[in-house]
Image (cartoon, rainbow, N blue to C red):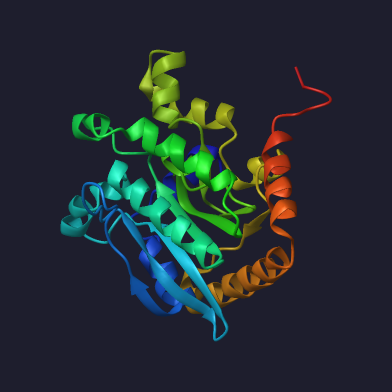
Length: 264
């Protein structure tokens, strides 16, 4: 498939939502609400559950909803500042009890309404990235659909990042890129090609650790495989001293974009 075709696949309404992954991968879940400042954002589904009988973890999932009513309630998966602050509250709680954090990302980007800007959207995203870089507990992020701009990065400063094979991850939407570069939003396919948004491109650029094969016809089996990988990664990360964990995370992001040769 072309990058634009993968983009359309990543946005398909039939793809499982963040809630679906949490409910398949975690057991004995408890959803937690609110940012303790303004309110609760339904676009962020978060709480505590078990990956195994002896492995509690905090889950944070951006959820787009499954029908019109739920999508409206969840802003079509575009979190507001209170959503990111709720996520950060749960991350800090996880750090306190040394619980690993697992994030599922599927968003066009952060909500861009006036009320979000009034409540500090940019600051909320920046604060999440800053705090995640220093969080003294393992963090793993999986891009399950669309990883759009800062809305995705606010949950992306992790020790390991994975993508589904038809997911996309980009600094700006291809539509936005086309409008800026060519003043023509119809060039979205060209923008998608230039941005290198596919999982395969991004793995080649070493922005992610791996690609997860999609098998939605056997979703339970697929999630079982994801759970196995999460448990394996988390066990390895929990064995690291805190300072080593933070150094590795810092170095992971410092080396991004460092190329010996640039193709012209």
